[in-house]
Length: 415
Image: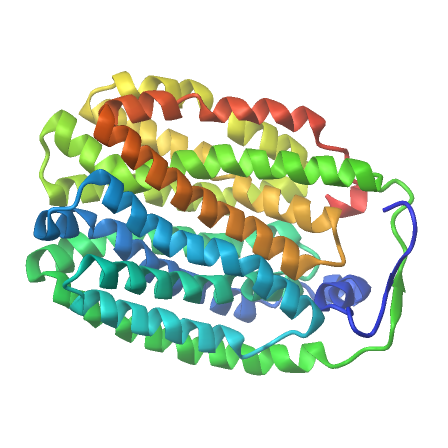
């Protein structure tokens, strides 16, 4: 990182081109139509994905599944995305694929249709894996498009992108409560129309994206003289992965098992529990949007510090609160802890500026993988202990935010 990075024709990537065009892009400002389109596509994508977790009570009752099997469904969905996202990102760094987003969304389309008709546990796992495959294709390249359309406001663009996904995730429980619970598993097929709409939007975005990735001449990218050393970059990336671990595993614990926690502890109905989950996920969406602009203004390291450690007192209090208190604390936790996502991803992109696709894929993939693996492990723990015990353990996860002290200070232009 202390020497110029020479990029050959074979490994020339779109993010490097974006860096070269930064002055012109900043002068033109963000491409708001493109940002809105990619954010709305993220909304549709994550709405469909969140249906999987939202219909867990239906699947559990219909097929007599235990918590470990519920966790395996999450693992099948998220591990597929985790395994393939870095691969997709690495490939598109070398050769961007503007229409791959629309093609990947077709996998989600077929996954939903299969899930609606599945009557065997193995088929449910395959359907979840297909939805995960669509996510693996969508996230790395769409994150690159968001940066390309940012006009230099990278945190803002990443937040707009994350906002769509977060609100999409929060809509899953609402749609499940209003549609899937009353009409049954087969009604999931209705949501394939959302996938079809997303395919049309992403194809149009691909038409905008294609002219941006014409072959460029071999270029040399001069690192900033104050950029951290290669060793510090590696350490920082490991720290960011650990921070994402603490954030994503806690959010996954609430997303996968909060419904069961509310039902078991407070005796609320399935539909009421889904609404409480929606409140938490909506707070996540708002926090995800606020984090990026705050990182642009005050520095991403500060936002990461506050958003991870700041949630600790509230996560520690959640297992001991009543129903109303749990709802209030879940909102506060969602607002605080989710504000770190954009800052972590942009921070990682700026540490390795010539590998935006791969870095985005790794971090989105790690987020999905941690969520899936964590859900499976927590489900096993819940089977042997209780859901309440799981939340008592997870309450300490934000303490990992202390590792933020090892993050380097980025050059001012990269903040």
